[in-house]
Length: 537
Image 1 (cartoon, rainbow, N blue to C red):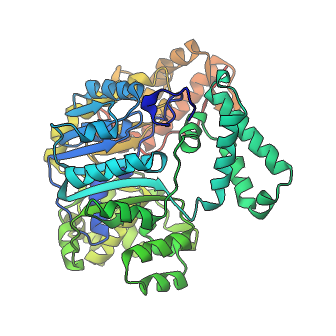
Image 2: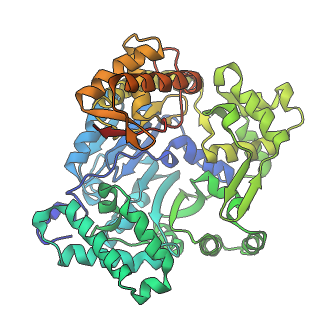
């Protein structure tokens, strides 16, 4: 990005680390379910071989390596991020090989095996054409026939109006600020400068008011995120058709979106748009038109090497053996959904009995066949159950689950990784996920919830004891809980608030975290962290 940048960065931001994000769309079970939902076959088996390119801090890679059987590989050019990923791998003991190699260096390794799954999150948009060609080479030569290739990327037309805004901010960062101020300060200056241009009544922003609104959202983002999203030397939102053409050189064909929510057409498309898309035979043209209908700006695509369709009957047959777990409280699942195209109402006669069945036996995982055989489900057809499972999985209420043998095989590793992550929560709120051996994926668990789990591991048995275990850690770091946007002042009030939160956690979240295998004692697996933040006193 600047002439003094180290040559190994190839123009990619290295001064500020990437965020510690987790992306469930890359989990093996989610990828396989996305394929099944779109009547697409694949050849992924267990144990699998899995490669992540440009893994950032390596949280997704490590959670998947710990929670799934197989051999995992990953590379990220940034040695600091690779070191963080290796630390997590050492904690879990997973079969994970972590490198700080460029994509070309990885491609040229003689010991690189053939992979069942290759994934990359966002990287495609922020690298050079040369590096995209290397990725295509990797997929062509190292992805197994029938294997899956996943990538998420910025796309047009959704990004088109804002591309000049990114150019303006990048121009200011490179031409109008000094390097000595540090990248974070230079980003702040670039954003402020763009705001000045908006306030000058510039005709571009008057003609594109949504871009000015986007700038307001940008100001609130974490600077580490903005550095990687907007300020790399290479930044190329790509239309779907162009991405599909490049990956066709690796014999890859588009199969599905890994974002199962996007499969709910009534949420995203008007009846007229659905009719229009149904009339388009070519899949690339159809997906491209869909992007225009939705003004899509970020795609999560699954490609397959060797596409093979499934009949609806075969889809239902395969689904029978798949297990699912309810990862929220039954009563928290809303049957009315809101989307860009309006409301969608889920059929209560299908969803309510299914949710009741999934909630039985403490949210124990259940196969689709087991659900269909339940007396509460006698009026639900296999096709209705399949659609409901795909919808609720896309919404995050339900997750696909591994079989009991797989769960037992990975439980020790996920417990070890989770211990390490929970111990890191003593000093940091950067990582908000733990690993589930049941789902083979990550589960959102915020910092305070993680500290509750740490207190449980330390033998504390009541919410009051959890609060007394946590408060000294916070006090030593000059931290307070927040209430109504303000820090809580006294120690007694902080402890009381922690105990209240602990009581809520024990009742609503702990049983679910237990069902997901996230904690070591009779616990519970959860979805979202409590609505609270930490502030310096």
